[in-house]
Amino acid sequence: AHNDATSNNGGAEQKLLNGFIRASQSMPATLTVTGIPFSSYHVIAYVGGSYNGQRAAVRLNDEIDTQRLFITASTPPTPTLTEILPSTPAVPVPIGNYVRYPDRTGSSFSLTVSNLDGYSVGLHAIQIVDATLDADASGIPDWYEMQYGLEPAGPATAAADPDGDGLTNLQEFDRGSDPRKADTDGDGLADNE
Image (cartoon, rainbow, N blue to C red; front, side):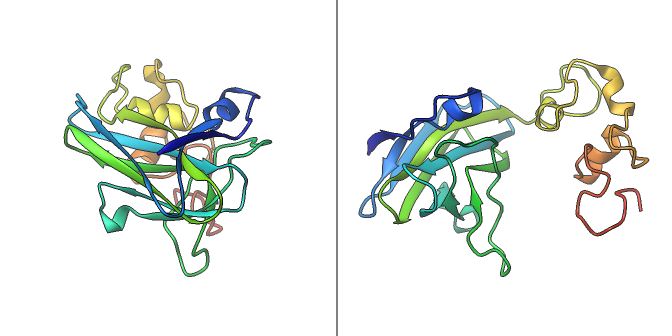
């Protein structure tokens, strides 16, 4: 594998998406990580390319159900991180720059990025997040509190309701909904209905 850059020199999120391990059309880029100390963890893979609009795929441990097809979105200006969700008939190749693989186990994993039709795509960075850590003993794991901008060091966080939908942050976590959106799934009903 080779390395490359996107010239993202702005804030922290842009710098995260600057350099990358490059996959060419003829050779995927694979990164293997070993010695993971957590019993349960999330893997977050930040992916992109030398320009936006390239088609690529990322896969964890060569497991077909973890494959995410995507269209690159990591060159400047990249104002936000956008999660690459599984393909659907309505959106067969989503646009985005990171994939979250939740609730993984084992002391190692491999990520493979494949270039489907572009000049240069690859892996910008990875995060390995302990899925069980709850420093404030609120009942909500720290990763969830950080993902949604809650206060990971405040035990009162569990009882708060920042989106006013009648569900506490702990209830939102238990349901898998967004504590910052009253209607997480966009069906026109509040999360508590």
